[in-house]
Length: 88
Image (cartoon, rainbow, N blue to C red):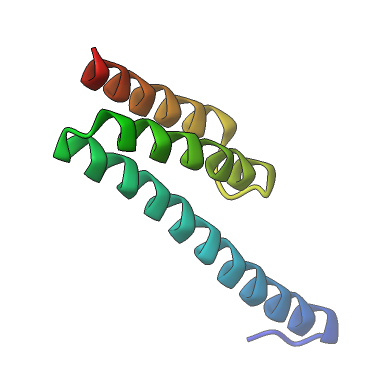
């Protein structure tokens, strides 16, 4: 348990930041799921549109420190590869 007032404040700050990060992480996962569902359905146009919407959301999570840049770049690359294979 936190003893000092500054430690108690940090506990509050961390809890608030955790909630925000959970929300951001969930939002990114939702966008990625839209892309995956479109790929599974075989709809190339819908998949491309979903990927176009997902990319900025994923990079926004990087800028907010939720994900590492290379992790998101790898995920975007793999999704783009799947979408491209679907449309070809």
